Picture 1: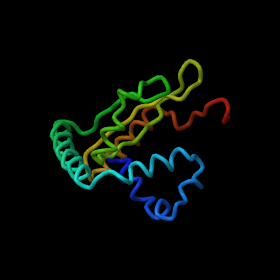
Picture 2: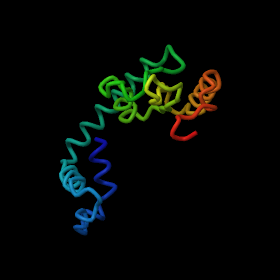
Picture 3: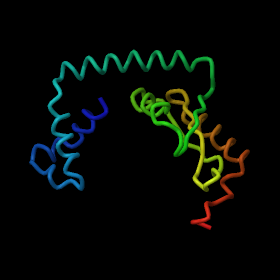
Picture 4: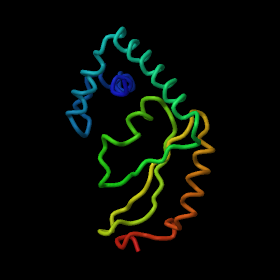
Amino acid sequence: MEFVERAAGFSELLRDGLETQLVRPRHGMELRANHLVPAVEYLQANRMRQRLMEETHQALSEVDVVLSPHGLWWHPSRSLNPLTSLTGHPVVAVPTGLGSNGEPLGVTLAGHLYREGELLAVAQRLLEATGFQEKHPPLFS
């Protein structure tokens, strides 16, 4: 769905045949392919998205936020980002320190729909508790 919606945002560019002017020509081909998804399929996917939003809302009903590891070593398949991108749940990445090689580490916090302020308040408290906002990688010191 995300790709179809992205293609819709580029409709004018596709209609005018200007997708070859994109920085990455492959993206133009992907946009054109996703621009051709039938409306019926998109609507069916949107219904599934609505159910997923409702199920995610129910799953989060017992918690304030969901905390997930975040960093270069964390496998993307374990990320909350695909789910929250699809359902619209707010997410914020919070740096928490540096790894043994100096790579930045952090956590991802996911919250409830329409409660971004609460999520940002938790993120701010976490950042203050770690004190990491005062530290910088050697490259930026």
